[in-house]
Length: 330
Image 1 (tube, one colour):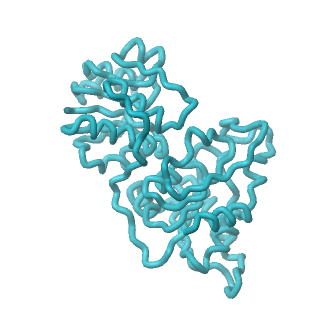
Image 2: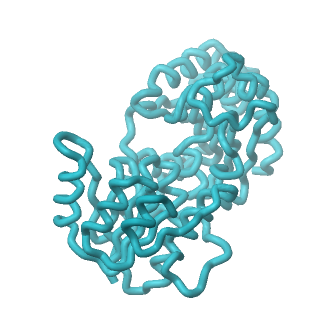
């Protein structure tokens, strides 16, 4: 059973699609997956034991994207089943042009026109359940729940308890808590945990700000915090996942790494501001606390605070996060 899966672009969204992929894997025991997606989604999910091919979709890079999509579809060939977790015209065209008969995607004008199964999906539910509904569009027995997130990258092992700090959020500054407050929380727990600062290539400056703050803080009995490692911009996607998986505790904004931590069941405190927490919170992490403050203006879903006050993040204190960590019963 050859199954084509068009993955979401973002790391977190790709991870939230893994329960749907596991549903397909269980429903079709002889499944062989071909994954198509962004660089980050492919690097994270290509390790699935039933993945036989994985391609980075570069159809928008140079030339006519419609022609590029057509040529890519012919290169992929026909499948027994195709599923798209992207709601894009070019994704629907890609599925159609592979000449695959059974194609499932979220309901839209282009999927209704081009594909066999255009599933009407409510966004008033967690994204994991939305993806699950799309994957189940061709199944007679519809699932009512989903398994936890799944990654097949072996986690790293640390000799000492390790606290991961992730201050970045690729979507935009509105989702980001403040470096000095992350540093204050990290310093508070530095006697118990070694600290790793995470961040992508565009978040090196923010991680550097946390590092500078740690050098100025003086927890009881120390001259300053020194037991930290700054990995911002220094890890591949595979290394990022493996390292987060090895952490004993993770403190993060709403971000892709937050979902990586959920996949490994790492105890997590997640800080949310302008985003729809009911749709993108950690999925089935047994030890997870979500911190957010209700605002009249939230969730605004803006990349930057349109009101210029950023109170949804500004009002969350370091003390509040420290107390949340303590309540995790680690």
